[in-house]
Length: 162
Image (cartoon, rainbow, N blue to C red; front, side, top):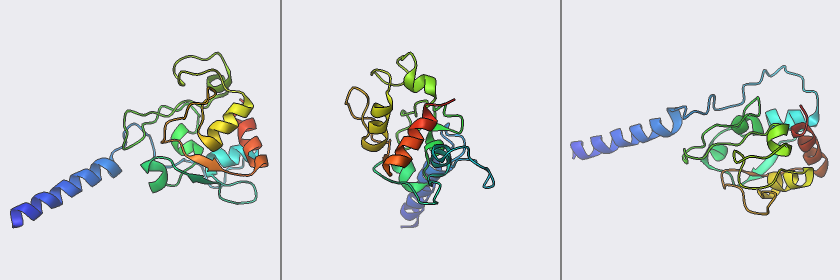
């Protein structure tokens, strides 16, 4: 009896360590923003904190295990530099795309999916509905964000800058 329960216990510890403790190429689990940081725009604030200028939490539906288990912001998956490339557990083969202005709106290559460049309107559909410019669904690890039209405009303006 002890051997069986001991093996089960060790298996659970190993699995938990693998899923929670391993970095999986994701850098830090949370966005590393100084709480005293001042943001240049509401869109930048939402990207890094998941809250708008009024302090309201931007909610989401769906998303992968990571977004349901951890404090979720755009930066927590796509990175502080918006370069993407983080692995999404438990689907380690899925990496987040870059959200730089060039990656979204510039000459498009195959690093951001098999679709055309984004427009501001198609980027809004990606954020809220999880749709590529072609109308195909984004990977299910991408949460579908719920926010006001003005907050959405601010996020899209931020992502199209720099």
